[in-house]
Length: 91
Image 1 (tube, rainbow, N blue to C red):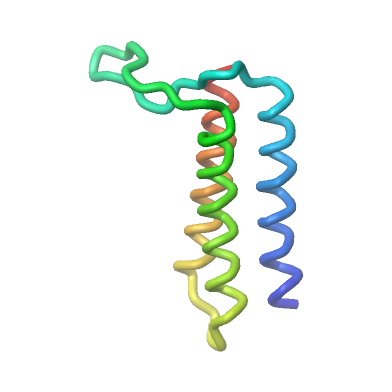
Image 2 (cartoon, one colour):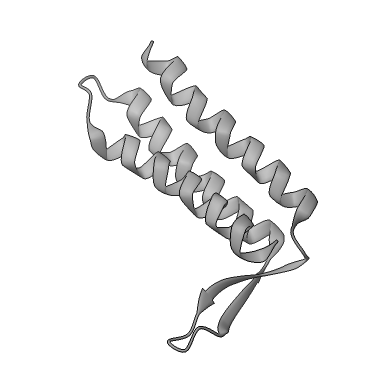
């Protein structure tokens, strides 16, 4: 049960990364200035890999721990949120 729960997070992150790879431009905005203008960009691969990596790290820590903790779940959700936000802002 526990491993399949975390596997769903990894699958969701990979699906979002594949969708992002297909629809995002080569350079994506990853940071905005105080006035709302883009202030930092990154190659598409790096932006998508960061979200997947955060999700996978959270899931791996969650699978290794004996007792259930919300920190790993939150970390996995943050990675998925980063992927979704990157796709929504840059499409």
